[in-house]
Image (cartoon, rainbow, N blue to C red; front, side):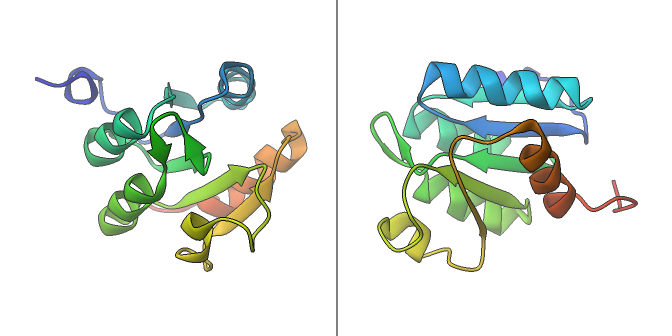
Amino acid sequence: MTKAQSFKPSLDHILICEDDPVQGKLLEELLRAKGYGCVGPCMTASDAVSAARDAPVRAALLDVALDGGSSKEAASILKERGIPFAFITAYGPGTASTMAAYSDELIVPKPVSPDVLGDIIDTLIPAGSAE
């Protein structure tokens, strides 16, 4: 049984993929304050791929550059699973090939304020959406 499979499923959990421990902890604290559970933060590209494949989540927040690569493969898996995600990144929309491949996805610059994070989650998981 993998780490993600041993995690008790909840439809109000958000996957965080962020290699900066300070930013990852901040996102986790902001999400928990808003009543969401968290999977992660995943700091490496390989951990992000594993979580994207297996974690029972409703949405994901992806940093573009992760330790050991990018979040491109994790984004692809999430898209295949029908899980909405947003890139939260220091890169601009035109500077990262990962984001160019996902130009229809939400791209938000760092740092993210609590209000902006709330707006991101509301966009990814609209009120009253099917659980």
